[in-house]
Length: 139
Image (cartoon, rainbow, N blue to C red):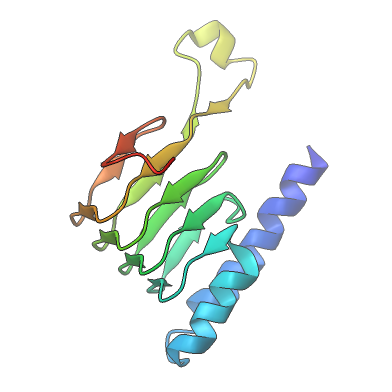
């Protein structure tokens, strides 16, 4: 689909800028996050390198911190609550595929939202699977 390919290309261009901003002041990196992600709370930060599918499905509460090398496959929404801290090399995966090989062969894909509540700590190398809710709900 051309619109999906265009969105992914735009996200890659943004990631190139963001991941090249390691030596920029924090306020400039914060501005880059605000430019691309769905929502970025006050004092939230992601340390580059960072990778995502689209970016516009990711919402960060206030004071959220993601350390180096995090990956967020955001084909649907990813919400991270206030003051949550995430260690390096963590992956959040929302994309899923049918288990039935015949259905999978059709190219069908789908996604399940991920929600991480407030004041959650996620350790290094964690993998959060599609549809997971961790910590208190945010609604």
